[in-house]
Image 1 (cartoon, rainbow, N blue to C red):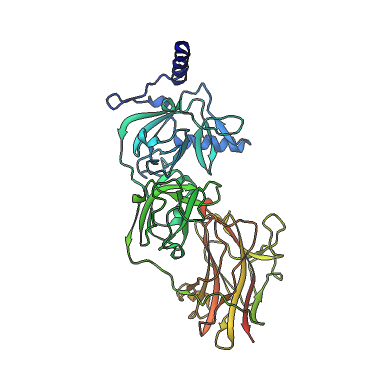
Image 2: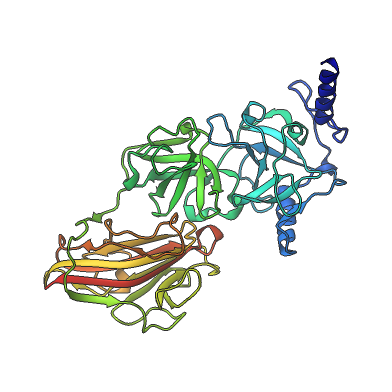
Amino acid sequence: MKIRILFLLAFVSSCVDDGNYSIPIPNEENNITIPADKLTTFKALYERYAQAVANGNTIAIIGENEDVYIEGYVVSSDLAGNFFEELIIQNKVDDSNPDNDPRLGIRLDINVGSLSDTYEFGRKVYVKLRGLTIGESNGVLTIAKGEDQRLEQIQAFEYRNIVIRTSEVVTITPKIISSLTELMETDENTLVQLNNMQLNRFELGATFASESIDEFDGFRVLESCDSGISIFLQTSIYADFKSLIVPQNKGSLTGIFSRDYGDDFNVLILNSAADIIFEDTNRCEPMELNCGIATTLGSGNLFYEDFETQKNNQLIVGNGWTNYIEAGSVGWEAYSSTSTNASLGRSARFQSASSGDDSNIGWLITPAIDLDAQEGETLRFKTSNSQADSSYLEVLYSLDWDGTEANIITATWGVLSAAYVVKDTDSFVPWFNSGTIDLSCATGTMYIAFKYTGGGQDNFDGVYELDEVSIDYVQ
């Protein structure tokens, strides 16, 4: 028995210190400083990974002979259970000098729980990069171990010698985001503050992550009162605040800008429930028309469009459509595809990807519908998307637009809230039916608009498709 105990002690000792680490773990009284000539930058790591990808690799390996470090500040915390076996660090405490020294973040994948006990929010750390690997995990840049084009976690026996804790704890100032369209891929893994936000009205009363539909994480739609663009709030089902009701007013929240597990859409992840401050009771609800879903479909037709007569890759024209480009250089175009995400023959598509525009807003508006000339009017259509990436499609109506492009923006537009529009979380393969939306509770002359909001940036360049638009009535 004594021999076995001695063997175990020797084994543990060899795991903790294998002789490859020359810098000791500091304590509060004995801080350390890494020499400047051994420090590299977050930007250099991003560029190194990009070069590896350009060369056909999925990871970049830092050699065993490269004695280099990065310096960063912890902006995540697993104290409330919303992060697990990971540290998020960023290179700056604020957003100063963004042009000369961009604010960047990196995820550290570590096979250890309760990391906040050692590396609390604001703690300055050095990361010893020798032998580590740079790659993407869950859609964000990650430092881990690994080889053969795979990422593997930094293990418990070694992490303290890799992620070196200093005695310095600083105040982190989040980047203030005035519009969700400002969020860039370079903001991933960093602390941001979103202002004038609220929970989508259809999710009022929902918990953070304890609904029956929540698996692994809960996703709640947050929308900007300034632009109407939305982003998902992601909360782990293991977070200690999962059962709390998401605040139902509007205000600000601070968290880590990231991507969901499948790298399909943007998310914001809170360190704790205290990071969401929705205290303004004046929610920014849109005007809406909700006559419900019709139980019957009339046999008469007022308007129909399947886009079959349109020309591929050309702007939608004719049949009474108004195809208005409010911002950017692209509009609703016809396209045909037999790929995995196939069109329905020929369909209408809005694609801001590769537009090069900071903002793309496009309207596709039906001709006028006289609601007083018949009874039982209804609307039907189908939508699909290709990784919506937080771009946004709305189905709007107006009863006071005069039909001229010059007055589109100044007209009063509301939401047809009963219509189902494909969501960012929906699969990108199928087409989704809107339902048979009842319009009969409105009177006057109505225009119906399909409005896309997005941009050429990677995080907002999603693609939406539209087809089989039909406005019917009871004869």
